Image (cartoon, rainbow, N blue to C red):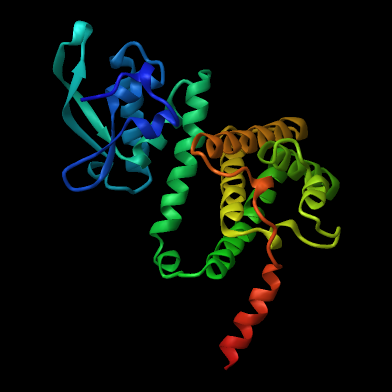
Length: 279
């Protein structure tokens, strides 16, 4: 039986998640519609329809992500009623919030939450990631992912008008400020007792690298998807994405990135890996 939304504590999207008889997670469309503040379920079904189409266009098997079913809904005065609904996978929820009313704060939160969680799940399901056993291996993997996605972000930011190196440094600082509670690159260096010449990303553990990877991928996606133009608008977008990722970390009870420990340079791990390969 669905929970009363007003009594939910903690990350609301996680609280309304269900697990079916096969151990697979799903979200009921009627519950999700209420969380996303859709009073008319028929209007929400139009959003689900767009999500179906987006799923199809992404070459995914729609039936793996969007399934019609009957959902028990709690009515007034404690009465329950079985009503038609839709089972949505985590990826389907991501597509739903991308097509929902962007003017609602809860939709913006949902976009960040499901984007982060979907990306995390993608990484965790990669064979190359599942085979990693140690923190060092995970750091090397995520650092390489971040290196690649930072190149994509730089290219997309350039298309938005962030062209000169100094402008891109400012753009990156806006992302850091959003994610690190106001700290820019210089502030993070000081907070982590790093020298100016030391790369911040090289001294992050896997959890902090993952947070920055989410920031990077979602900023690139938002700039491109919303066709952001102008340096100021791009900076604001990057800050807001970082801020929303930070809020999601807080919702999930995670440690804020500025409070995570500073670790030895990843370059030392690369050297060890090269030596091991030669042996």
